[in-house]
Length: 251
Image (cartoon, rainbow, N blue to C red; front, side, top):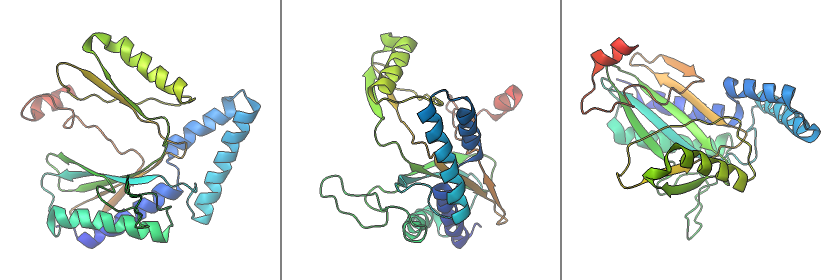
């Protein structure tokens, strides 16, 4: 059984790592940008960002005054047993979010959309978002926190099936140009939709790219990772049942 206290402790550590430490893969990309950027002002800004990130890590403070919107992605192994069950797990993640807001600190960004009610802890109705996924033949739980930034630059459009791939490309470029953005990287995921439409959304992330991930085993062992491994073969399965033999044969 995975102790609830361990889950909350690791969750609080992840919140701090996401707010303070830039993931190594993202840092490597920024360093390459700093070396190749042609514009004087752009190169200056990128280098200043890198210096700020290093200072934040050394001082153990949030890398940016706007710490984004904390959210959780939870992957649960099919054989995992969590003390108190899923309700206790969710409460632990909400507590970890509130405690991290005070202790790191994070900026309390969550407000009611109409009344602007602010509890000063980034917790409220539907906040933080917690998205659950599952994994076969595993007894661990995996926690990934993302502090979503990039408030402006996110858009949604209902395309028609006939728009095809060219329509997807056009909407993506329209979004970049409309918000004055420049794409450092583009990651695309697909999900089955209604037969009559082709919905598409573009979600921008800010230049802090705040995320952190850890897997907690049934034996209490914790492994921190840079790569959240968002989409596994199991999550992308297209059939009713999980055809493990076919997936292993394809590996």
